[in-house]
Length: 131
Image 1: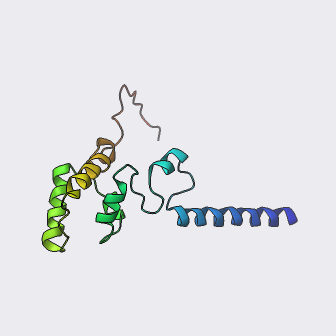
Image 2: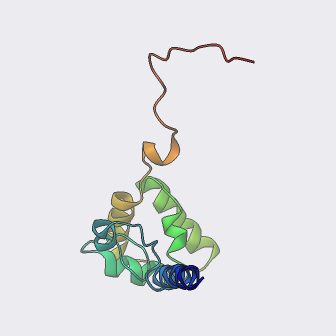
């Protein structure tokens, strides 16, 4: 009986620790250290030399999750910036616009794996199912 109680307490403790870690870092405990080192813990955005400029220009008005959930080409990102300037009073990015676009096109461009299913099966030997 005591062993079962200790097992339940340990299980609950591990669960609480995992939830607190996810809330603190915004990542699941199963994520690799390499992945954690390549993204900002606060925003989830990719780290690179221009990260601070992008964070300052983009997250002043909206959540970084809005960036993370989209994959656009450079021209499409520019189109989104122009749309925000027309419709949401986004300021002129000035000289930083090129830097922001370079960053977005590098880290948040469309990629095939994000939009496609697994590779098609090949050389499959099908067999009839028994009833």
